[in-house]
Image (cartoon, rainbow, N blue to C red; front, side):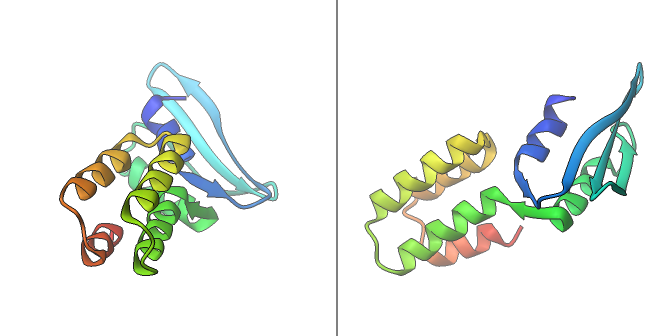
Length: 126
């Protein structure tokens, strides 16, 4: 499976009974499919123009975004007046375990600017 596709899949925690796999592969690319309880939910080739948008949309339907969970928890802890450094350290360790570098970088940027809860809410809108 291509690295960019695998990174998107790793970002989501899917419900029980949901499987994501490469159903076929050739010199042009791979066909990824999502099944729930054995039934086909979605299938597409990674060279299709809207592949990554549709993959994100269907994974959102079948599960939850781990990164948004971590950042929402981070925002909640800040709202409850928890120590900034402790909440930040916890969020960083959780993002590293998910291995999602873009959000890790964004969180570092937010930390350096001493982000407020409003900044975090804006970031989570995506």
